[in-house]
Each structure stands twice: as structure tokens, then as C-alpha cells.
Length: 97
Image (cartoon, rainbow, N blue to C red; front, side, top):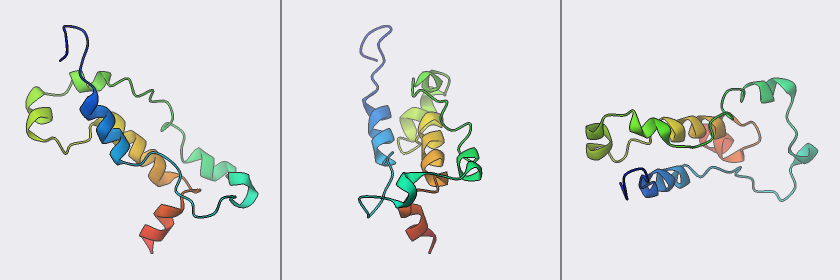
């Protein structure tokens, strides 16, 4: 806590950056300009709605956050799931092999 109503989100944003929240592609131009089929896009429904406000961190027990700094928290885990499920991300296909 920096002040009364100003939380320190340094750890939150560091954890968010640790999941590399962007598409990993080797080619500069993807086939079909990165378009997805309707079914591929439907898999991502519900994973875009989080606005990364970090409000859920206040609901978590203080001990969990303090003694398990590797725990990413609900917002970061949701975003990680979003990037894992994206059909355009080539890093996931390489890891699955």
C-alpha cells in the first residue's frame, strides 16, 4: 500500500508481464492476416472481459499474497488462459509438440 486508497500494483504488473501477453509468431505476416474461424474465436469468449483492474487482489487473503509471491492471481491467470487458447499463437503449438 502506497497510501490509504492507492495500492502498490508493481507486483501485479510484473506478474502480468511474466506471462508474455502478446501473440508469438515467427513470421511477420500471418496467413489470412491473423483471422480466426468463428469456432476459434468462440473459444476466447469470456476471456477478454477482464479489464485488469486488480480489484480481486483485495479479496484474496493477505497471507496468500505475502507467502506465495509466485501465485499469479485471478486476473493474470485469466489472461494467461486467453493467450494459451488463441489459435494464432505459434508458441503454444511449438510447446504442444
